[in-house]
Each structure stands twice: as C-alpha cells, then as structure tokens.
Amino acid sequence: MTRKRTSYWPGQADKPAILLMHSLGDSPNQVESLAESLQQEGYALYLPYYRSHQEGDLKMVLTAPLSTYLEDARSALSFLKKEGHQNVVAAGLSLGAFLALALACETDRVQAVISLSCPILTDLRQTRIPYFMRQKYYRSLEGVPTVADRDQAQELFEEFDQVLSGMNQWMDENFERLASLDQPVFIGHGQADEVVSVQVAERLCRLLSTKGKPSLHIYPQANHYLEGDSVKNCLVQDICHFLASLSI
Image (tube, rainbow, N blue to C red; front, side):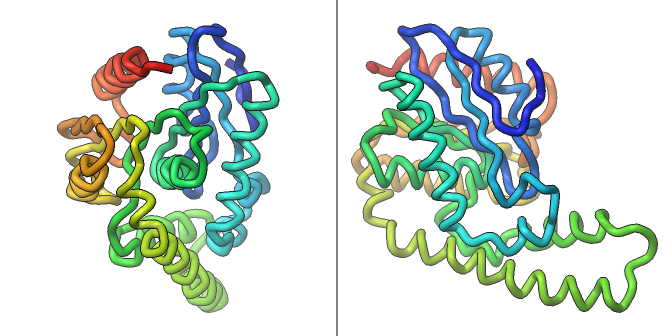
C-alpha cells in the first residue's frame, strides 16, 4: 500500500466502503495499518488528509477550528458517494472518531460508525490533549526552547483552547442528536489510554444505548493509538465481526 496524502482503495461491491479518518496532529499513516487489514477483507477504504495537516505546520493544526474538519469529513463522504458507494461506514481514531460521530449526526448517508479512542462527552480542555499537543510543539523545535518559542507557545495554546472550546460547544449543541443515533456504533478504547480516559467510551456507550445498539470493546493495556500487534489483531477481528453483522 503506497503512502499518499489522501488514499483510496476500491473494494468488493457487496461490502460497505469505510471512511477512515486520522487523529489530531498526525496523518493517514497513523491508521494505515488498520486500513491495510480491512482492505484485505475486501472493504473499500478512503483515508483523507485534513487540509490543516497537509503542510506539516503545527500552527495550522493547533488553530484550525472544528468547522474546517467537518468540511473535510463531508467532502470525504461525498467523494465516496461519487465513487458509487451507497453504503458508507464512518470511522476514525481520536479526532477522526469525533468526526465520524458528527457525520452520523448530520446525515443518514452514514450507515454505521467505528469510533476509536474518541474524545467526546467530556470537557476536552480537561483531558490530556493540550498536554500532548504541547509536548509535540516542543519536540518540533530545534535545540533548547527560547523565550520567543515559549511566547509563541503561549499564543498558540490560547488559540488551541478556543478550538477545544468549539468542540465542547458542538457536543452541547448536538447532545440530543448524538443520543438519538440509531446507526450501529463500534466503540473501541484502550484501558491504558493516556490521553482520553476509558470512562469516556463507557459514557458514550451508555448514551447511545438509549436508542441505538452500540458495541463496546475495551482493550487491556492498549494506549490511545491502540498500538501493538496483539491489540491490532483483536481490534481487526472485532471490527470485521461488527462489519459482517451490518444489514447494509
């Protein structure tokens, strides 16, 4: 599988296409291993690259509002429809999972959702997301951080706080829609997630159980990225079982 900024691989006509979206500050490469496994099972895969991430500019990543990500997700869904895929499963890791659920709230063109390590139903400013993004910022610098670097960090993370506040606002405004989702939702989360507490996944499952049929899978020892061969093997097996059970 060739690494590209935005990648599409056709699959079998009798299986749904999967829109697989990556995490904040990363790239489609972060979910490529999962995509490879699912493609081997005959599923079409589309891995979009968020516009704010394409240049590798951390400032763009930290200051892009939720609206731009939603636009990218909608465009990706439209792309799959233009390719002739009538049945689409919206999937994602972390931010990508948030966007997958947002798409499901917006349109019934999403037949099911795969939500992995999703930061939702919690104040995102109180998670460890700001800490890990700040670490990413300092790792991107050359040498010891200067006063100017620290001043820029202060400005950037004040803007990033507003980005997270915008996501919090989306959750407030769309809580009822989220609670009313009746599409099947696969929820995968690591017990050892160092960014978003596993309790968030449990909370999401309880909310979706009101009208939908969520499928919750907790992976012991797994981190936020659900890394490791043993975790990946279980995850792929569980996702394939979930996809095979869909009546679409």
